[in-house]
Image (tube, rainbow over all chains, first blue to last red; front, side, top):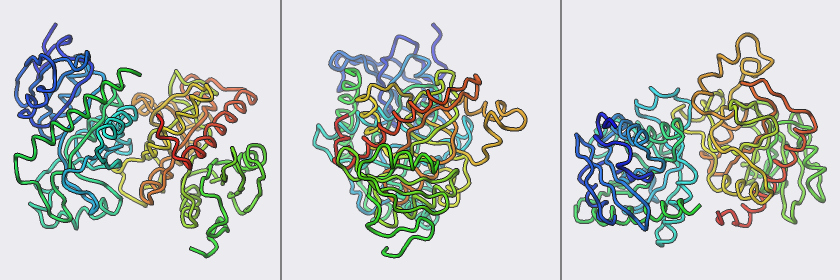
Length: 245
Length: 251
């Protein structure tokens, strides 16, 4: 079997259940939650591990930053047999009542990025799979964690999409704050769109590391790793619950 | 708002908080008189017929929206103004999927925004997404009723005579792009209802019956369709009851 062009994986090397962080540096941390994790491939911004979780074959593959590389990762994972995929990442809040460290489970995303528009016209909704959303909500509740559930926005230009780099950000994006958008990140809308087109289940779980309105931000790197461990726990339990159904 | 709403002619406290939204005036009359107990017609103005009643001993209401997103937006805005809280559209659609035959039921997760009204509210990049709790409530009730359903994205648009079996020219060519994207069906109200629901923070869902299939040309008989519409109404009214009671959490 031919290896995937970018991910350098082949069918049979990954599980149907895949966690997708943005940062390749987080893959080993997520793989610590697997039994007998194996490094499958390491190519460009894509790092893949496969292992077991309570009898389930699970994998982690990083997407890199932004929808162009995330779309490649998703397409190649699907071609390799993935069926249930959850993006796991960080986000900046756009509402005052959302605190640092809070979990966000998006139901859908505003398509501010350029990738998904190449797939299907802009009026198509970027929607997370409802079974994944349900499973993530339940797993979050089981771990006694609070979550915000709603619409987020995905965009491409990091240094235009943050109040910390661009003072005009809030003014320019006021329409989204007024439209109850919970937070901003860079990959979900293309992942949701492509997931629906390819008939696989895709969802996202995020943790708030900055708030654009209060200008609070988690600067202590030591606080980031526990956030990823917590989300990985939730994600793996959600996979386990989905497998039972 | 205590004032009488401009089009729906009702004011705060006059309409029960859980509302079914059919398009057709006659379907509102049918739901109000055949499905609700102790029902009372409270409004009959333009395309808006509103009934209060009870279903499984819980207060519910029905309001017709008329055809299209313009009048549907007026209905949901004015009902939200007077304190209504839960909304489920129940209607018919044209199937775009070879697997969805006339009479089959669709629970909608989101809608392609082919309409004009929602664009006046928020830029087109914003998703028209159904409320996830309402989706769950509908799925639970469908399961309880033993009814099979399809779950997914539909297309909402404005010009019936561009995308229907009665359309001029090659309507199949016009809808092909959506069929290829896995869009399940075409109808005329859900996207704006979803967008306004998200903006005004009221949960909105949608359950549809395929009246025909735009790809295969299959059509259902009147009796078959009515049976499916009855099922969809039963599921939707039950979901409103569960949402009021917070039962939708039991997935």
